[in-house]
Length: 127
Image (cartoon, rainbow, N blue to C red):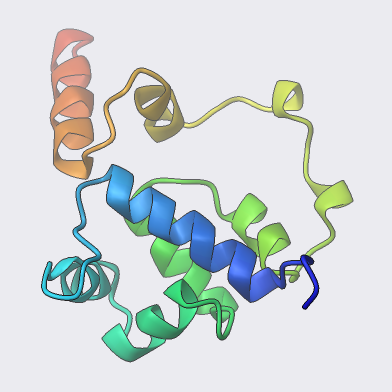
């Protein structure tokens, strides 16, 4: 058996790690898969296939997952083989998003991220 991971397996491993870090219980009776599928607007069956590395998501589904997780879509498109990774900007060549900054600070829960962003807007007079 080859140790080479397919795009689907790589995405599935990444997604499982992201979901668990955000408190989605992926155990058999944890309910995390169903909850995330609902939160992201994808089917639980498709999510299960992605997590098992059986298939990669469509570009539309990648967009929904990226939006729900608050992560940039381009690296996910590259991870799934839709775009060439060499086409991605170097990390130092772009500004990070607000959500990426919050994640770097350890604020990973989407509800907490929204609360922090709301507070910042109020403090700077934008809300």
